[in-house]
Image (cartoon, rainbow, N blue to C red; front, side, top):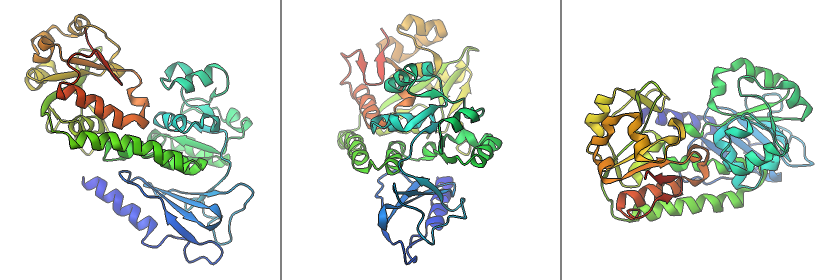
Length: 375
């Protein structure tokens, strides 16, 4: 919480109570994008169709409408203050996996020319199809982009995950080539729907704000519906078993465990993991996991990471001790679908699926959006 507060203070200092360009005589501040959960970005609108995007890391981007030029007084010589992005923004190199579904939901995969993942790694169906059809090319992973291919595709924007922070030489090279680097920081959001709300940032780049607002409100409405219902108070564990036999459980307070809690679940660990690190999982010996989770009402196996399984027998092959778990004995064991982590746009729907499990509504069901029951 302290770290999140520090981020918010930094953002407030960067943006200020009066937008940076309001005092310029030739371009005038008009409004700021309304955000409900996201705290990692701001979008300010100026006369003439200009938009100033400010991110938590201090980076700024100024979208310039098609056919326009930088307004006088805009920070054209200070790229750290505002990197100009000339619309229409096309031929994007997308290395931030979580952002693909946002472009897909906006029906703007056409703006992406290059992917940082290969076709077989995508569970966003239209992204995979675009790559298989050659409409979207593999541009190399974030740490080893194909610079020549990026230049030949006239790429001017690279959307990177926070992993680019570990490849500063790559970021520097991209910027030297005239390719702006926008680091997706949605993983820093405190609230799960804060991640979903990043669709509004990409919509601002593509002039799709109205659609983004509609899509986001659909997910927010699903969450509000869940929160209005009585809380079922179901205990739940979320984990997978690694090839070395360790239980890999979600860290307390990360966005997955927060979704479980918003859905009315009580995570079996109160304070698992170091809240000061960005690592989302913790390796546990089975004995420790058994002590915490054996009486849980429900267990959810993270097959997205641990490998897809379909039956309780396959689960018990991972570790026979799981047979003693209450949830296994009652048949309340669910698995995540492989697309779970690539569907940032559907987190409200995901929370609702968890809620149906915890409330007993799914007692006779074998499948829900993003989840299926082990047989």
